[in-house]
Amino acid sequence: MAGHSKWANIQHRKGRQDAARSKLFSKLAKEITVAAKMGDPDPEKNPRLRLAVKEAKSSSVPKDVIERAIKKSLGGDAENYEEIRYEGYGPGGVAVIVEAMTDNRNRTASNVRSTFGKNGGNLGETGSVGFMFERKGEVIYPASVGDADTVMMAAIEAGAEDCESDENGHVIYCADTDLNEVSTALEGALGESESTKLIWKPTTTTELDLEGAQKLMKLIDALEDDDDVQSVTSNFEASDEVMQQLAG
Image (cartoon, rainbow, N blue to C red; front, side, top):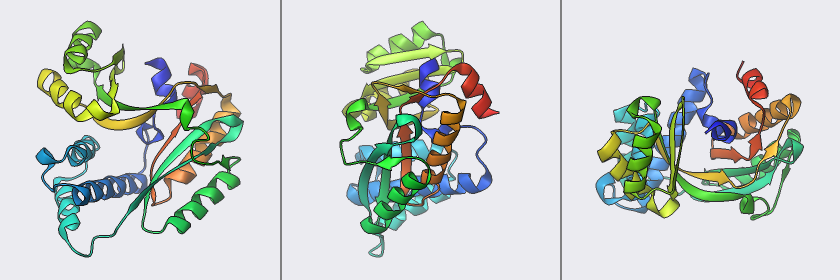
């Protein structure tokens, strides 16, 4: 779990400002609209939409925003978004995966490439860093739901692959295709999760010192500031001391 906090998706970092919170709401709403448009507008009949709604709720997105996002998918004027994944290297040789939804592939590619270049990174070809990650389902619960053994047993019974626990909480991993089923079973055993989503989990990590980590954060912040970018994941790792200085 200690390692998890070092490379976890950056949108979970504390201290988000209101503007960034608004941007996060917008990105979650876009995922809901796309998921609803691609399948059934009923979350109970559409696993991707159900997960998108659950993640939005865990991020405190208002109910009316969620409902509007679903209704938007039913209108003929809803934008046609294309899902694209970009891969590259950040400062210190850290692997970075950027997931985007865009209605203009050329604009997004140009912006992402420019952002990498301006912040000490290099945008690579598809597959250039993807082999360093596994696509997994991730369900996070607070420490208050139970001890490590209790949560581990619930995870095993739900069909999960692994569970990591520490004083901060419990992180449960499963195959990406099993996330809807596993999260539903966990909900029955442990209640609502703090977060349920698909992630890129690093299979290998690159350690950074404070200066390198600060440069990487600058790149990730700039990427996340792009309205087309839905998520940014890296495989960086750092000492507890460096992580504390970053958070300060």
